[in-house]
Image 1 (cartoon, helix red, strand yellow):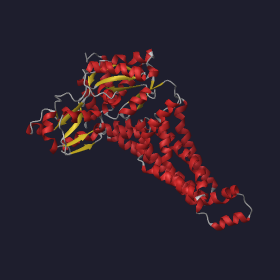
Image 2 (cartoon, rainbow, N blue to C red):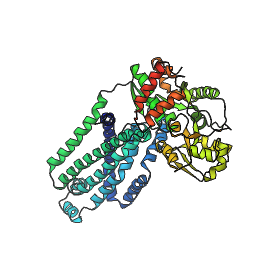
Image 3 (cartoon, rainbow, N blue to C red):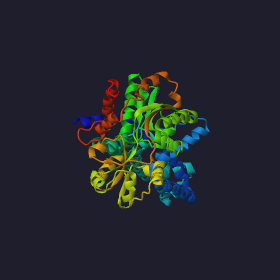
Image 4 (cartoon, rainbow, N blue to C red):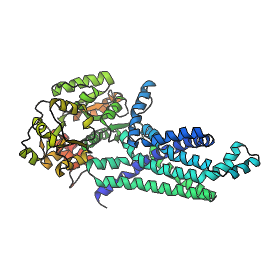
Length: 515
């Protein structure tokens, strides 16, 4: 087995345990909700129409959107109640996955209960059974195989959808998949997919065995299958028993640089004696709200993102003034400590292929505007909805023939292959130089400065040990070294993990090579 596979599989046990905890909790909660509702719906057609209609409506919402929607809902609820509710991680993922599991369980349970032969019900009535006795002794046993079939379907759906919980900061096998996609590490992607699929298959087989045992009235086998599932869940819960309370939660957005910087912060905190936990793949709005709400303790953001997205500012000021104003605003409005800028900028940079830059004489965004009607534009997943894009369009008469959004992993290859003609690249990304792309000048200064900054949650702002562990990172990273660290992760050959790149960057800082 190669080192890449060994490193990938080394992460599976912890993430598999978290995945089992989440998916089984959602499934059990869905069953607890569905079975009473199914009994009610089976006895009232109007109730059935309402309940099944609601469950069907939930199913039309993409799972990723459902997960994302729960974050602001829980955040608002926590603020209303004066805190105490975590809007990031387990709870929003649990609620979203529970709703997603309702339909198959409800539909099968209602179908099973209403499908019980009338003769069986009449016989129960003839024996003088009460409604409760008839349900327990006649209807439930006859409907059990159909109900179990719905639970099996819900279990497979839930295990698969749980991989998306990474986007709301909950650890799962999706961590491997999302990290692999962002860094083009297909070993991680395949490991996450195989582990998730394997778990779904094993659970489906066990539930299928229980279903057949119920149908054939073989109680020992049914209880045996249930016991196996229970033992598996118990083993998944064991890692929680030894966890320490003082765990630092480090947030990261969904691209390589963020993964590297999160691990760099983690290395420094681990040296100081902290246990760390990473929340990768968070969106720009979610991650700032999370640090303000103490759902994460620290992360790296960029001055232009805070300036435009959070502060709603559209004016352009010098980089140092922007950083200072952000520090004052974040502290006064949210209690968030802006510890300082790391020393490099990662701004949006419009990049084109070198042959197009030469043949069409492209040097600036004004030049791009001249030929934009014949160009296809490729961006990351959020740029077209960001204020920066509106600012660029206001400054330059750009009208592309089409615009397409990509995962950053695929945006650079799309430009190389000719699928798009210009991309909204990141200035600290090593793939720009590696591919020979030409970055166009923003002569009008439409795009604000994007200094990388350390943001610390209110609950950690007065922790002297915490601050001392990371403050040496301020002003310590040059854009050249950040590009090299990024490229170590993003390149196709001799690829390194974000943690390996973080160690390399950490050594450069400690050795004074960034001075």
